[in-house]
Image 1: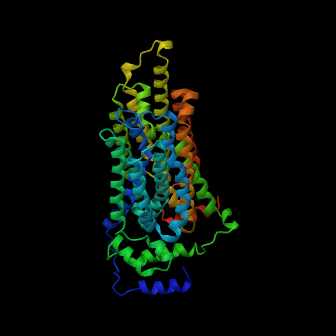
Image 2: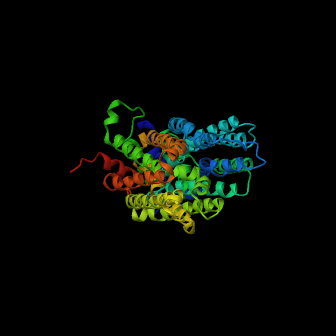
Image 3: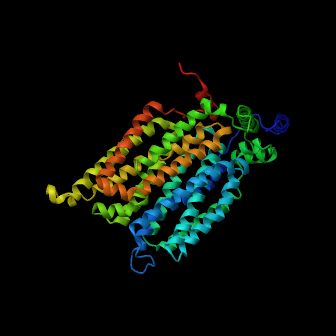
Length: 477
């Protein structure tokens, strides 16, 4: 944004009808955030579609009843491959075209991907549909949190940004619950329906005001702020905060010197840490193979019902996270979350160990068949409390607006790559370590995430985006 445009903008906002006493109504802010989060619901459906669908494909009457275990792992993991490409593209597209516009452009491809899966005559075409859906999910994974963090006021930023994981959990719950009653093809059609609803809402929402101001589209920014926070909000204060933040991040070009800037490299390191440990703790495996895990481990509870219960617990845990995020802070929730995940995964490993060695130890675990369900419920609730939502809350929070699209895109790439490696290697690691060894492996990294989070994770609760950015450039005493 040029200095002349900024001066003109400041004159425009210094209007006589701007009230001296601000009155802010955030109803439309919640609506706009909810509209964007519908895309994350669809993303959750993409991520966990394989859990019920690949089980249904092997049932009588399916045209893919001879699907192999290797093909199942590809169906589950392919979206993460193109998700990386989508993450990279989103960083550029959201910066050039805008956050809201990017979501609208991604919608058509999203619908096409679901219909390609639904009407696929071969496994190869299903692969194609999954690749396209992963590309769209990768774009939305960057665009949505960036959009929300830029429209949310400081007081409810944690609540709204934690909605990312809530929406994702709702998508997982929806697809697993519908998968209990729908065939895999109709399940894909339901994904197209949700995507259509999302685009119908986002098209009437405003673009991100900070992005508009950066592009010198001042009139649209004014209308956007009034829509989001009410016509009687303190527009001048909003604009002053945005322009001050932009003035600190004046240049669009990034030089080599910027890579040594602590406001750049510290958020990058923290984002990479959060994304890697989110995935290496095994959550993507649990969501992608929930039904199969219950079938294999020998739970006394019906696998389809147990999977729906676990998905529902994920939603409940994310609701609690949203409530606590701006009260107890990000850091404490993250430590508690990682610790409890480690305990539950360790217990699940113990049960799996004895269930697979019943002949050697003469220990009948079937009378304790409720343990896998309770352990996975505790695991998903703990994940949803901190390790799940906090990476998507903090990545856009800690990144200055100049680097925000790049850092959020980088984090999404790391997340997608880690998710692909963990999901695709599930079968190989299960053969190598056994299911119990795999759960203990995940427990170790969940505990490690809590320990590292205790010492290295900053607290952003109650800080403005400008204050967070300044904290990284502050010298250490």
